Image (cartoon, rainbow, N blue to C red; front, side):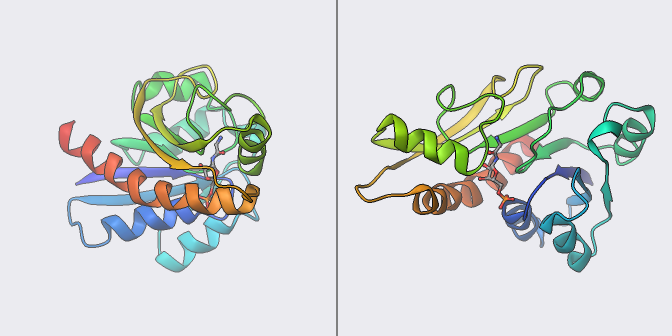
Length: 188
Ligand code: GAR
């Protein structure tokens, strides 16, 4: 049995897509969902799916207790699905190469601190880019920099705003993110 842990700060539509994808798979379990926000939608989703979940406030991520909580689930992969805090080096060191993130743009463009959610789509529009997309990558100690595992593209259309762009990008996220995770699990 392979264990996945999801970190998320928001509503959790990517977490939902991952749960749906692995629902019938007897070899893979989402064993824990962790948020830094006690009011994150992803926690309701975890509750209704019967998945163990926890809140770790920002100040407590870099503690032995948090590391122990996460390590106890022996994750094959830790998935950042709309997780907005920087992952502490203690976690990076404990799970080298096994923490992956999804970013709603084509890195290295439109990445870095403060670039999340609608800020990213607004930056794409402000830059006048003709295409955008998603990047799934391993994380390292620098925001949005680690090894790229997959990028997928979609057009920026005349008349797009941040919401219409977010919706188009999110469709790519929901399709590709679970499949990249599945591929990593099968090749590990
Ligand atoms: C997703 O679009 C994800 O790519 C983005 O947050 C959204 C979370 O949506 N992540 C970042 O911007 C990270 N820099 P969700 O809560 O519905 O999965």
